[in-house]
Length: 195
Image (cartoon, rainbow, N blue to C red; front, side, top):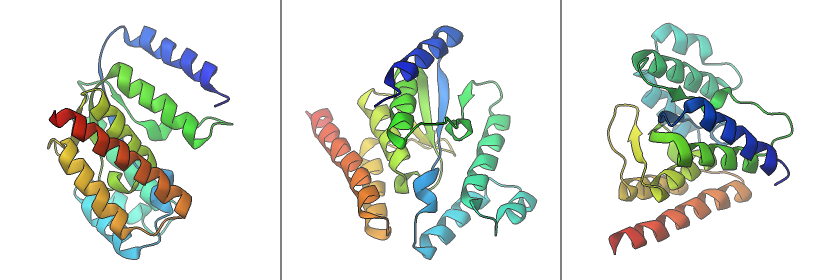
């Protein structure tokens, strides 16, 4: 990874700024969610996200390129307004020139590991390479994982959700393999936690 040194420096700066305060991290699908070819899944995600959206916002963002990402941005904005007493990180806002997906995974994984009190997963996280990785990182480091409604997502439930998602999605083989890799790591971790 060519950006590791820079990323490590940024993470140190974040730690300095936070001064040991813990954050809520919003795990939101970004790139792989738009690659889903199954229309039923897209309809399901829109249905699941409606309750977090103002109807006018939903109408304004549907039918536009990248509308799912726009919906997730609105959800993040609304979640932050409802929890204004907390320090919340929305990863969708970070766009770094020259970064690859593995740079983002490493960066956000380290932010979660070092600074997250809880990770909040938005609808559709189980279809996302990055979100399934963030779920694994949180579970590996015993960080609480919840949905937007505040319901706990334990490791067994998360594994089941990812397995069901893998049976539904039609992604490029390379992207499917990354989600499957995250699932295998979670299954290993779940086996260790049972002992």
